[in-house]
Length: 220
Image (cartoon, rainbow, N blue to C red):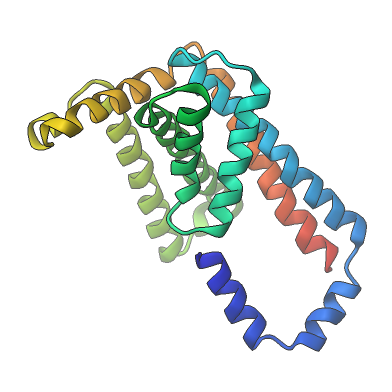
């Protein structure tokens, strides 16, 4: 995976003695807090995914969902191209007889929520911090992120309302797969569950930023 490539490049080019010195001086309790927060995130992500699954009629216990989510994330750290997401859909099929296309539909909505939140957070925090002194680069970055958010919302709405003409393009054997995917996308997120999804997404990414803060602070 890209993570391992980056890690290999870092380790092969870094001064190991200096690296060991930095790690030895790190505040262990902050590292432990970051590690604890890392695993707590899985609980909130699993709970959020449970809401998406519940909205499409899936009502199994939280424990099974959390286990599958954790295994999927573990695979994502080992293999490229988010293979873990496909593995989660496979586990949902093998354990709960859920169609893989439906499981992928809920995962697709989950990714859209994360992308939208990160983009909006960056835009709001940049304006808050830099105010009227935004550099041309920051302005371009903000515009790009806003375009991404709008595009993500439009894609979601197009799939939800059946406006994408994919059924006219796809071979017949893929039409049923797409219809199941579309069903999951259209039902995963609704107005009733939206406040809970927003709240959980806020908690998840607050913890992500907190982990980053703990790690950076631990090495002064």
